[in-house]
Image (cartoon, rainbow, N blue to C red; front, side):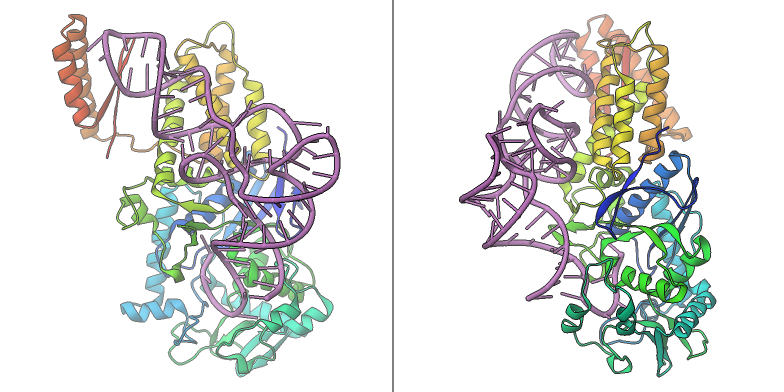
Length: 492
RNA sequence: GGUCGGUUGGCCGAGUGGUUAGGCAACGGUCUGCAAAACCGUGUACGGCGGUUCAAAUCCGCCACCGACCUCCA
């Protein structure tokens, strides 16, 4: 298999040929969710983008260690309730223990990810479980002279760092611009410069989650967890670091500075960032309050939704756009995705039942190289999907007897289609009725359609149409074929 | 204000110096007892104005509009 794989590196702003540090292994770290709320469409895009990467690297034969963290401490609220982290704040509102909130939303996140067929990462560390490691990194940075203590908190000294290093290398920001564009924030008086960011923060009395440290009872700064945990599980230099584009600055910029300060080198070879999802052209986010949670999408229970959309529809919708392009939400787009997805899945079923001929009138080899080429080019899933629809045409055309396929080609086509649709894009069949009830229902429909077939043979069109119309009314789609019939239940 | 990105046919969304993206919708046809499904065919789109070039949606410049980030929002 050709392992050529080109990735866009945010750091160089170029597409680069992927070359892992160790020949057959890949270490990747992705910023996971902050578990103080339900997962929304934005979380789905980030998770699916890096799930696609994880799946494709694995498909290419790499042994991948995929680390995705759970942030359960340390995010501050930037409003009047300063000093209190978001998890603590929500806990008080709901009269719950902070870890209870964390547990609830972690489980909810996992449930949603499972529904979206997002594979679990190899390791899913949580920030609260790595306080010791984070304190160790803060110490290292202090010893290296790139941080200072102030009133029980520890801050990264950006200006000192910038004298000898390039602060802003990832985001393209210049330190002079940053200095002249700072807005007024609370707690600034503790810092030497407005650019400095917290490595350790002293907890205020109302702050529920805090841990002992050499400096104060407090909690780690937001950027600390990723530096500490990626190093712990992937080493101080590793291949890929991913996350949403909104994390480039300051979060990932700070991570680079932290690891250079602590370990003396940049940790990450390839920085990858997925674009955001917009709603009516505007960014969607927790803080903007215009987000749609995944459970709302799956149930259709939201004022912006005309109907429910299944997890696979959402997955397909996201994969139909390139991960670095913005993607705008609309009912129309979702509905189009639903139908396209449906067609792809039907083709998969047809493909499994095709019968081979002596020769082939189709070109599987070209299709195959097209598919790999698309994925190899910075994971161009929309192009891949376009090629898969070429395959759909092939499959349907063979099924209709307008094209033929040899036994060898059929096997090749089946494995190709299966690899790309199910293993790499991570799509799956939905709503396969396996319950006892469903099976009996199926038998009853078969019975009725057999009666209809009899009626048709007797040219009793009245009875035949009556049965079909009634079934259609109930949500069954009846498809006549030369040798009988097929049917499908459309749940709406 | 600074930095970065975007503007593609009815909708979504690829692509990028000269050859069909693809999906959904629409229209015509084949098939069918009639439908449905499937298949075949049809769209000549690239924000505006200049420039480079034999050739630009694709490169350059200017303008307009939109968005993201700018110290804690995936």
